Length: 428
Image 1 (cartoon, rainbow, N blue to C red):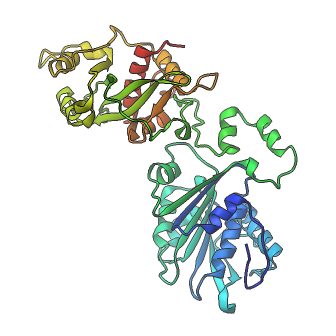
Image 2: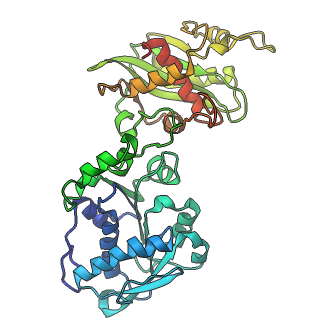
Image 3: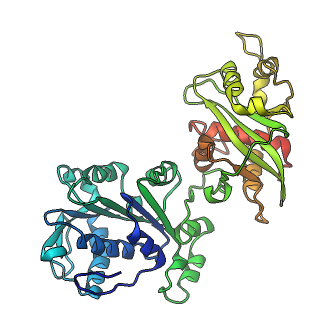
């Protein structure tokens, strides 16, 4: 990239060029250690300054002033030095409080850049910015980032905000904002592994493989959204691997409907709709829809199912699976959940007398997600949003022997999936 008016060329890696080329309001770069994400931010700031009108402020933010000066600004000063671009103050400042720098913009004016720690984000209220860079934002609180997003509103230039960061847990605010709520009209989201930085010393990436456990390596080097908590249940789940928008309902095959029955607040009636398909690696389970209803009973779920297009289209019938406790009679109606389903026309049922052991159920779902030979035999349509979040977040209770934490809203639909898997596949 050229840093005109200084006419110095700075070379960028392909993922850095993607960031520099984006015109979206929000640009997110999740990268492995050493992938060059902070360098991408520095190059982006140089580019932003070249198009910033007089009087418009920029902002560089990090989670702490130590991070801001030791890493973020240190890299920016090094980039400006390579470009021959002046910067004020001329030497890297060390500060424990708010500081400002200035860089030359177009038409020989200087652009003021506020450098702030997000530990005191409330101090940013009342300031308007044309552009903002947040470095290593996984360390920041969502409220702090939202304050900056609200301040990105100077109408004198097209506003942009860049996030450069190591990835975090599924369920974090970053994952929610840039994966679950991704808006292609407003956002560009890029990822870069450590391997994509060809300027790293020989042996560096290999040393990381020896240093990190497998799952931490996936996050810190391969730039994947990985749950690191030992209590996370479905550690084999990966959106990139398991979500498949091409899953299509086949009316000529049986529709498999599996349930986890609940009535308590925060514990929804949850079920998955799936089909067995023969794939290149054996039988596969394709989950194409879900029904998750809070404060509902079995009759409400039946009505919802009959309103789905699959119920009208299926020619091979519906097979019911699920929680063995659904065999218990309701003291008010004298009917069980499964007898209600049968009376509504869902009489073909494969329900065990007792539920499988919890650990066996978890192991089988993980095995279908990816076994030791690398086979993937479980695919999920992106419309199953609650199931997807549940597979990412479902965890064991802290301090318990081996008990699911059923306080998580999304956990219950993963249990419904597990019952179906145990009924149709051999447990590991």
